[in-house]
Length: 334
Image (cartoon, rainbow, N blue to C red):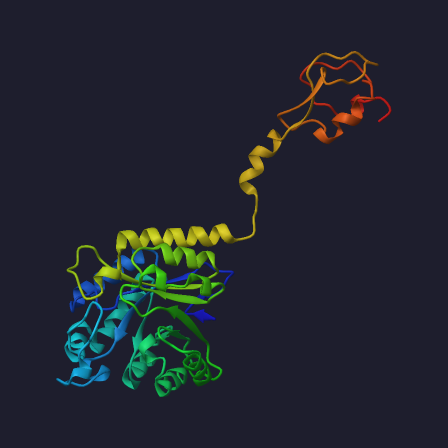
């Protein structure tokens, strides 16, 4: 799979997405500052969420439209989404600024209008959030753009995954393993299930899970991102600020590098220090080799120590001087 100009897969460093979410706090200027900061952190992409409160829910006082638990307990859905939206009219400028900064951008979409906007602005990918994995018409419509899709799996059943995959047709897509707990406790992560997983969307606090997932072969990492000087938002508690995010990016890529086939280049300057057989006492021609006149020591210029016992029946072919590495031409009959 490819996102923009970036190949995705085990042979390439993980594709790291800075999830801006609502951390701009409704300020366009802060959104632009987040793009700057994500680029400085060397994230591959910054992702926003493209919705209006009316594309997410309806303005209702009924109890079903009030959040029952979690960090947003007691909030009406409509009020929450009105406060946390990234207005659609921002996206042309988001695209322009992100392109100028050399960082990919795209958004989670929640209705056909969001899909159309991503297609119109030629976003390199489209995200489907975990709560929308059951919206098969939306997934099918997003797939019709031909753009690669990232689909979070929080709360999804095996059937949900199967139906979402079928809705993709032949379009490229990747599931991002996800636990829809905000923040997610470590006991709910289930890293054992992430072996070889293509991607994760992580809501834990800190960077332990992205690093561990990289060691398990994950190729895409999405993590909530904020600027430390911006006011707190609904997502701040499980977001990394740009300092910690930059550290995560480095650790993830160092982990990926450490997983690659060994080159042993760092050993090149030390190979000559391997043990070998040396003359440690002057030896006359015709004298037998003994533990007193040859030893296995560093460095590695002489014969391998494995020949030590066999040499005890051999004699010196010439006078040997203390400190000479023992070689075959010094041994009579060799």
